[in-house]
Length: 151
Image (cartoon, rainbow, N blue to C red; front, side, top):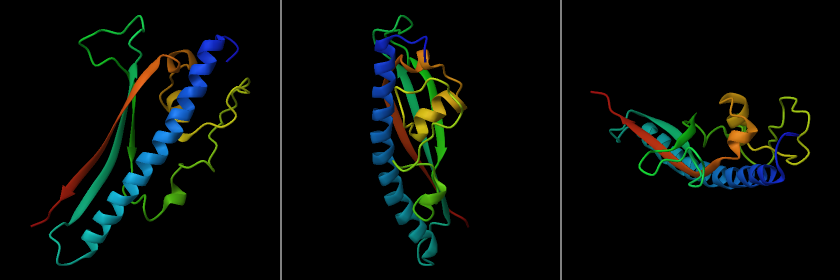
């Protein structure tokens, strides 16, 4: 963090806030979908046998980034998350403002005292540097449902 400009530090604070809000919206939507589908699976009169519920988040470069190309996807990185069962066992999932994922021993993180799960995933799981995280512009999210039927 010491090697980041003030602008990059502010970008990281903004990114963490954006991800926290996105996380809250998407998880609430996933809970609704999961509740509906799990109830359908339990219903013997419904033909749905099982389902999968997954999330893909794509992090795109800012349009003013030096590596941004007009007619390309400009994906810097992505996160895949498995959400089946999120409605039944939310406590097993690392979401919500009560969870702080500032947990890998970063020495100078006083600019962000609380890391949401997906912010944590970017630097810890995806090994994205803080400098690269500050390059993130738009964030594209897809909730993917697979309906499974058995004959």
